[in-house]
Image 1 (cartoon, rainbow, N blue to C red):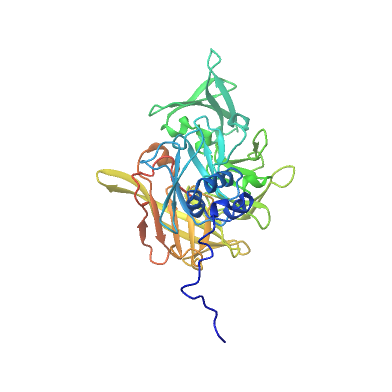
Image 2 (tube, rainbow, N blue to C red; image 1 turned 120 degrees about the vertical axis):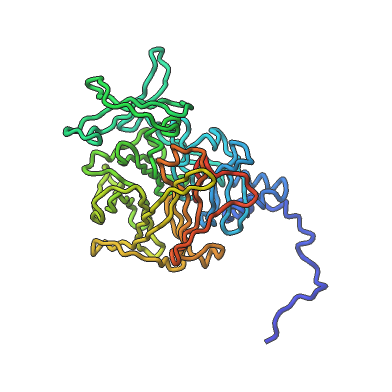
Length: 446
């Protein structure tokens, strides 16, 4: 059969086309199918396309099937700019966000292409770095264990956070107040804990800056995960919070947070995810226990679906669901690393376990079926290397998420590495042509 061909002297039918005159509705639909890098590139073609690009960012209509990006604040850009390092193309893209400045926020997570951030007053703000869209969640004082604190002149200067006394060895479950100052920028703010019914001092703590300038209860509200893209409506936000890593949730548009802490033994959660298949959240605790969390009814329903694996609490657990349905736990081990006169806490080993809910056990594995795993402050996820060939198969892409170390060493360098599960090796990642120390806010995958 003769093959069709085009001669070299055939006229180029596109040569006389004025692409800037394409209909706006058609361009908007096209832009809505693009990945972030392509969207940025086409937005710079001409003035008319740039206007459609801005409209696509405003709506928002970006494709949900994006290449993975490392999101951070670059040192060579201003405080309002978000930098995205595309892992497939190794290129950088810069997006300017509206107030509050990105560098003043804390990144509490990422989910469905959105960042979950908190401002200096600990107000939770969902932001889409590709579209610039932002959505505010209920204020922190609507949480069950948070109260506003005012000066004698009536000026807001902090929060009272109710803290369960059993954490300090008391026999009876009492609540205690933790005074949290708002916007404090000193190096070592002081916490005063007292029994609200007695007004007596129980314990004084001196903790590092980020617990307070961003609100103690919010900084510890990690992870935070979304049930879906917030722009689609009916989105539920589930967060881990103080005291004792308990749970609160709210739907976009709600006026307050709903606490799940009173639903029995619901604390010490280290990571959570949302399962689109059954509409449930899943949480892993420090002892390796996994719970299902049903927020579809009038009240939360929490069930233990995997019993505790170890007998002590550990703060290095992640949980992720694979595209083929399996659930995995990731246990991170760390060490102090001395280099150039500085001591940094870094992850030095990752263990991946497949969860067997039937046999109530976990099985160690080093095979992700040629997928790459992304963990950190983000909602953990897996991507097939066949669709993103620049990624390393059966590897873990990790951003530093060791809470206590990060908040006590806010401007130290952040570990961003690839851990090869097959040979145990590490590859340090550094964005190209960037002067950033990747320190604040902590970098996160999206």
